[in-house]
Image 1 (cartoon, rainbow, N blue to C red):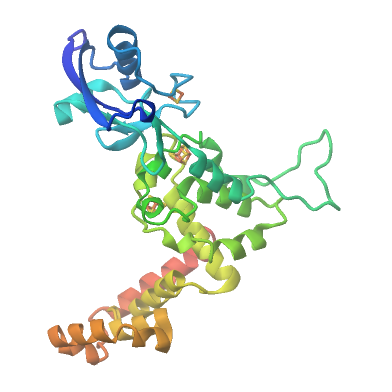
Image 2: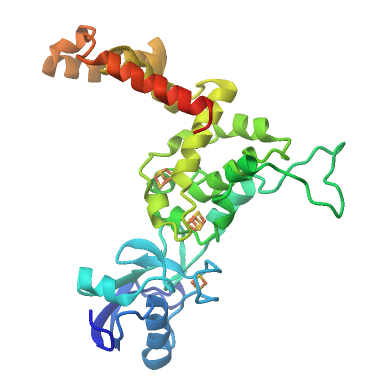
Length: 325
Ligand code: SF4
Ligand code: SF4
Ligand code: FES
């Protein structure tokens, strides 16, 4: 796109004001803009030149404060960090909606209470040993390897993009959400925290396994915090701390063991490992339907050709896990 060129860009902006009794709608505004213009700047121009009633939230305009998160062409983004040119080139217009998974207060402003409530629930501060408080006026020392374990999570600016993008939050409002879990991880791996084990014990039955591993949180994060990877780490640590106590963790462990054993899933065995004998009874109708379509599921699968290579991969992964590489 040549620099200096102005684009004529249509914006379809979500408008809703519960106070005036109107139903939600999209308002069309058209602006002439340079391609590198941030979406936030375009919205502020709409507000100052066309419609002063448009409500939105922002502060720093520099991708630091985290307050301008919204949906830009259906993706959770920071409006101040997203340029209009690429969005227009891909979609032919720019559709702006408020963040998902949080109730709309007005136009693009959402009530972030659910997001902050989950953050509060993970107890987002170090819990120290009262017998060994931090030395006053002196730094505590940590090795580079210890610091490296949580170098990403402090980058979080609490913008809520990941919470908005998360289908597990949409499906189950009790799910803590990616940001809260990434922060929880940060305290679990901090060697100064004395509640790590307790935090892990509480999170496995507290919704950890509701995460679908879709990675939408990671792709929507403007600061590369990679919450889905931290949730994966938490799952491994929770199983190491207390075993597979939840349906989700039993399923994950069963899946891994099945593949290690024969390179293929033994579906009836996996159901037994996940739900136990009693749980299997509830799945009899579904099992009979599967049996009609695929009678071979009754036979335990033979090991696949090259199973020794699968086992070698498992060994390499286990070695890598042990030395932390
Ligand atoms: S990976 Fe998990 S936490 Fe992240 S968006 Fe998907 S379901 Fe939500
Ligand atoms: S993890 Fe990323 S997307 Fe989620 S709140 Fe923090 S900065 Fe925003
Ligand atoms: S206005 Fe602060 S992050 Fe966008």
